[in-house]
Each structure stands twice: as structure tokens, then as C-alpha cells.
Image (cartoon, rainbow, N blue to C red):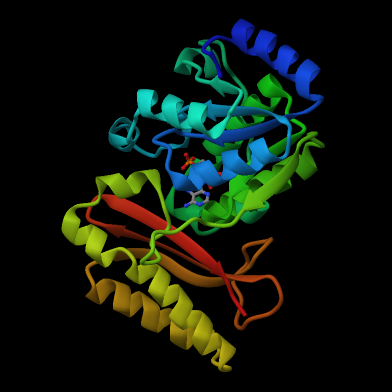
Amino acid sequence: MRVARTLPELTQHCAALRAAHGRIDLVPTMGALHAGHRALVDTAVRSGAGVVVSVFVNPSQFGSTADFQGYPRDDAGDLAILEDAGCHLAWVPEVATMYPPDDATVIEVGGPALRWEGTHRPGHFRGMATVVAKLFGQVRPDLAYFGEKDWQQVQVVRRMVADLHLPPEIVAIPTVREPDGLALSSRNRLLTPEARRVAPLMHGLLREADQALAEGATASGPLAAALERLREAGFSPDYFALVDGETLEPLEGVRPGARLIAAASLGTVRLIDNIAAG
Ligand code: AMP
């Protein structure tokens, strides 16, 4: 595996990869890699493409400096995981490479970015979309993988790619979970033992809400009940909602493509999750 830390190194290694494999797949990550990231990388490697994995904790998508600074980092562990997975090129840029001093362009996202994470994390999707657009420009992938765990993020990226006529095909990979249902997340390693014990409740409540909807309930009852159960268990919920899977507009009842989405904090750790509804 090659490791590129500067743009000239990236350009050189990408050209070699494209010559050897004919195509390049990109997996954007913020590191602290786990089996969820690994599922994306494994799918890319199996496809036969030249595989580039970016590891960059993107400051512009964090609301507070404390959250950015406290985000887990494990450079050596990440490179070992990527090597083991058969990744061809790790792209590990400095902040100054992604955001040089004269940087003056951002991607403003609307549509699916406006609600939920968009409301509770102002500027998050602007920062995410901007860095993803930069990564697409740098790596020029034919295809890019994202995780369904960040469902709204996938819809924002798909919208951006469609609106800006960007080349990569976007492929979403199902959420990888712990045996107790908790969605794998780099932030899980920040949970206290007690919070880790309670955390799977979010996924359990998503499934219960789905069950109630399948039995014919309208959305409001099960959603309000889930919010109450989260509070009782010590979560500070931001939302628990039934939405259109593409536009993220709230729904009154299930229909094809509907998604149940939730976000809540346990102490200082914010967790998000979602499942298909119906
Ligand atoms: P992150 O490093 O958290 O920005 O995640 C990088 C990519 O991995 C994103 O596309 C995430 O949606 C995806 N990802 C993170 N956790 C999981 C998971 N548990 N299952 C599947 N994909 C995931």
C-alpha cells in the first residue's frame, strides 16, 4: 500500500493506479477505522478497482473546536487496517493541503441537507460537501462508497453529485452493527461503559417503531413514544423521525423508500442511526 501525504504524491500514485486498474474507487473516511469502514473498503477491493481511502478529520464539518479536537484519531492503526484490507493508496492530507490560506470556496447544500442533522449541526453538511467535492477533484474517482449509517449524508452527496454533474457513481453500503444492534461508529470508543450498555436502545427503538408502523400505526404515536423512552434511558434526543429516504421530508406514515432516522446524545457522545421503514 502507498501512502500519499501531499498533492504531488497523490497525483503520481493515482496515475499509476489508473494505469494498472483502469478505474479508481474512493472511500472517504475520518479515520479511527472500524469494521464499518472496513465493509466499504472490502467492497471496493473486491470490485477490482484501484482503491484509494482518504483519512482526514475535516475541521469544517465540526460545530465546535472541542468536538474536532476530541474526535478519535489512530493514524498507525488506520494504516495497518487499510494495508490488511488490500487498499492500494491511503490519502492522508494535512489540513493546510485541504484548506490553503487563500481557500475561498464552499459548497452550499440545500434540499436533503436542510433538516435533522442540518438543523442540529449547523454548517455540518456544508463542510462535509465541501471536503467531499475537494476529494472528488483530487482523486477523480469513478465511484465513491459511503455508509448507510450516515443516511442523510448519502442523500446530500447524491444531490450534490447530480446538481454539479460530478462524475463519480455513489454507492451506499449497509450499516455494520455490533451484535447488540449498536451501529459501529468511531465515536463509540468515547462512550463510558454505562453509556455503551444503554446505547443499543436507539436501534431497538427504531425497530420497535418500524414494527408499530407495520401494524398500521400513524407515525406520531410511535415516534413520540420512542423519544420518551430515549429520555427515560438517559439520552438527550435531537430527533426520532419517519422520513422520505431521498428528500428527508417528514412523513405521516410508511410508504416505499421511507426511513426511520434518529439522533441522540449520551453524555458528550452523539449517536445517529437509521433503518428502512416498512
Ligand atoms: P466517518 O469516518 O465516520 O466519516 O465514516 C466514513 C464512511 O464510513 C462514511 O461513509 C460512513 O457512513 C461509513 N460508515 C461509518 N460507520 C459505518 C457503519 N457502522 N457501517 C457502514 N458504514 C459506516
